[in-house]
Length: 557
Image (tube, rainbow, N blue to C red; front, side, top):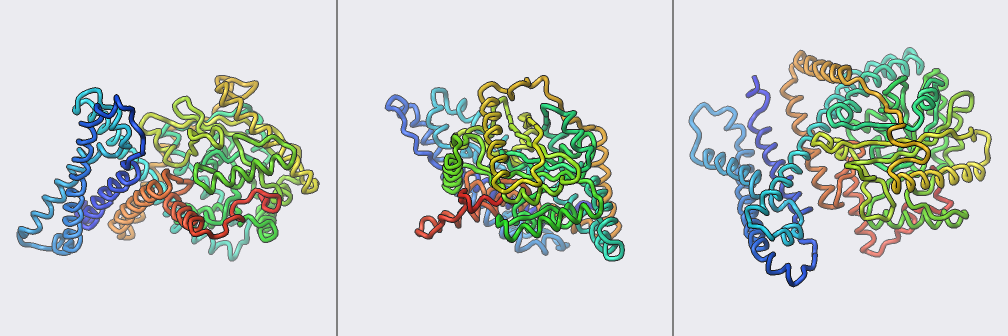
């Protein structure tokens, strides 16, 4: 049964992708970093440098063998699957070459994962003693990449089932019943899907979330309407928001996010058609009717919802575009009479004039500041710090290897500004972000928010056995459906393709951008290509002065 489901094409493809990931890791991490060694270090580094050069040469030999054998097996997969005779000599040689290439990749090739500067300076001991930790680190990095992408593929296939199998009947029902019944059933579907999304990071990878005032947060959810304004310190803010809505008193969580998200495969489609998030293009004039229409739809159907957004509108790393954006935001803060913010960007405020109508009749406006900590270190530290790390899905799934992510949330009440003028709202938001900046600065210096130690914070609880049972049932359901429909082999091959695509996207992002940017699956590769095109425009001297400007005219959200 397994042989019929996982054919030689799939196996060959998996091997090819693994090999390509090794190549991508080598290109993105194995390059010389340009570090200048002291004279006393150069002699010590000679043996290691020679070893590095030899291994690099062997890499190319192994890669040529691997590419040939993989290509040969792929082109002859029909023969391999259906031939009743014995294998030809060429097929046996190709299989042997392919296997030996993989064995090489899993052993010596991993040594060149690390930056060359680490090899050059760690040479006081023998070659054997220096290579072991390097190989171990490389091997662990590769395994974690595989585990993370398997988790992402698992997420994709489960969400795809809910999107393509369970969602279409709801749109058919909507034709005859309207939004009220439709929103009721989509809310139930979201309740069914959310444990698949937040469960693996929380129960498999050790993610934990604390808040300074859990009682206040729960009371805000019980009002049925809440507007949550968060700093944008990570690419998984949405997942933390979803997790906070799932834990304790359950409530549907909606998001305001950039237009690109709804076009990203599977998760983006789900957020568009099922979650019905509000997608904006950072132009208040064009987005205002869309925002108001979405809010009115949920109000008219009397659907409870917590609306979650990050008014900063962007998440910054260390590239040229990000540096420009940070500088523009700090100049804007100074122009408004504030000291430049060091931990947060300036908020976009115009869209809040219509978003506040969500809580005009009842509900709570809440400002939250999230601090992301891993191995005791604050990740979302100063904007210009080279040590700043922007957590993404891969950061969450790294917890599987023993380094889980901890999230500390500081929540406070904001007065309803539904009737305020745009200038008044701007003042409220700038004051709030000044407070957010001070909160993160205090956390960075003291390891906790002011007025509350870590052991005084309340934890968002999660029922691990319940989540495990839910994940099991969800997977059994799509497996049974695929088996009953006679498409289980096709589905399993599709999962393999999803896994392969995630691996390629991850490596592409690392090679072009230097890090992953996985807010939702496949985003790393897509955004890395967009960043690469932006850099090409800059190099060609094209005008990019209007890109990500933080001037007053661009303060849309």
